[in-house]
Image (cartoon, rainbow, N blue to C red; front, top):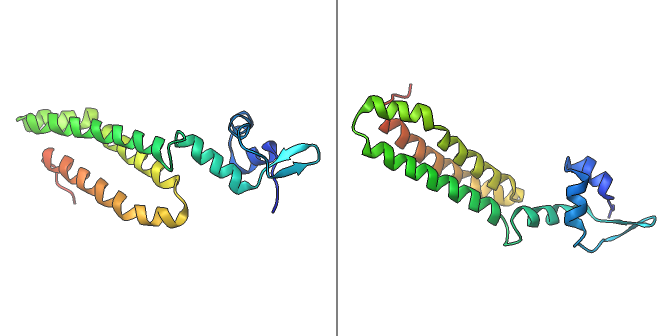
Amino acid sequence: MKLWSINAASEETGRDKRFLAKILAAVPSDGHLGRFPGWRLKTILDAVHRHECGGKGPGTGLLDEAEAAARELADFTARLEAELDLGTRRAMIEREGSTFGALEKALERCQASLLPDEACLFEPFLDQVLNRWLKKLVDLGGLRVA
């Protein structure tokens, strides 16, 4: 297996070398490149994944972010439902509709953090959740989709 230095891994992954050095400091090297430690790419990517998940398990940090975005969108939707005036609801959607985009981005980051076989399982869930929220917003705004 090929070993990667921190600099080479930084080039390959597009990650900052200081970031990689920080997270790899706690990871035993898979060997040495001359007198410097080296890691297999899988070891490096697993360490990055663990770091991004807050060390709590696959996707945990990203899931926390998605849950927070979902709560924010649910709060926004509740405010929309409580508003009786259609014009006011439309103005609210225009002003605060980015809450939907925040959830979409958070869920896409969750999906991107998964292994390819897991990501394909996540895709239908992602589509279903986002389509359900989008339909609710469209309905509350009295909008028509062509």
